[in-house]
Image 1 (cartoon, rainbow, N blue to C red):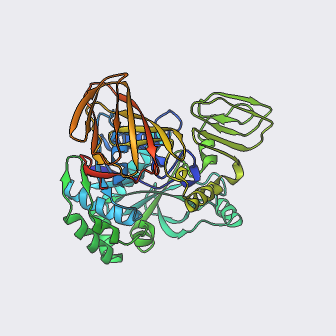
Image 2 (image 1 turned 135 degrees about the vertical axis):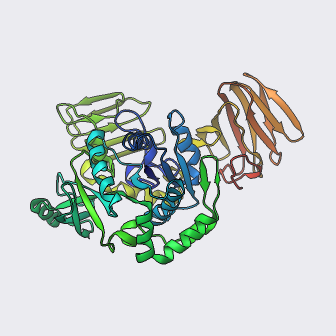
Image 3 (image 1 turned 120 degrees about the vertical axis):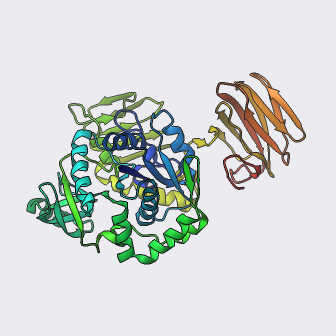
Length: 469
């Protein structure tokens, strides 16, 4: 059995303003319109014979991931982290889960935010890796360099261990441009893709040898966690695990490691330059995400927008990334520096580092239509049968107008059913709850009024999604 383990996390700060903390890179849609998470899930099924993957992700992304993969015939399982602790704890816990499924199972570890179009080529590499994994190797997937990139870690390859794999001589941190050019010329270096294949028992043995403290702590966490439906929600004790990558924790110390230099196309979509390179260009090198554009006398420029027409004139080698609440214009050659924008937004306490104007929730979405000092207007969309928490607000009152669907509203001691063109008023301090009791999406307009309109002005009394205040 080959069990895919999909690591789905990371803020993707270099892909702002599309990737944000509450809606990170795995949920970006690139190429065929599917999200990177969906593409990774489908690729995992294709190479594993439809074995359900285990997705390791933050608990805040569970409902977003669940909705994203709802249409898939084969559904994944989930291991939910209360916080990010890097790849070593995630892989150790995933290996314990895989051992429960089948003691001699092989694991195929895949980041959720990579783009691979050549699935047959990838499948061939996976077959070679699985054969080595069965023989007790920890197998890495290397990518043959196409250019002297400085944004990737490198692996120096040694003698062959099979027809398709070589010994790992050493790991190299991201090099400078001169060193990267030398690696490319020498020909025995590959990019470290962050994808792995090994038996669950082999990687656990490696943890026992090279990082026993982390293994013991992870086992304690795992043994105190129970599966409920398709998910295992890790307890708060997970937060105390060492924050360390699998490379530092195990791979750079292990002896039984091999690398397969992959010939398949691959991109980690690390910055907007990589996004542009993944999209077919016109004769002048311009790319876009199938959006409405007018391009005049411009070259090598990438444009991305959602619902607005974007016109550009006389641009060269630029990025124009437009979202409903933020616009990025940058030199394509400096796309790695976009993360500095996010750093400044965080420092200023600006909401745009975390949320889009439309925010996903377990029950549906809300979209901020207008935000002013004393009032805020939202469009709220609730899935059929879904319900918001029983809650109250200290500082704001709310006016609700139903636009479509059928709403059941708990307001203090009263319960009413509202249909389109009907409304209600929720005074500050009143316990209230909104439920979609229809079989179609419920849409309503909410007007908030008060002295403070922050999303943290909420007290939850009951919540079916397990959220605290």
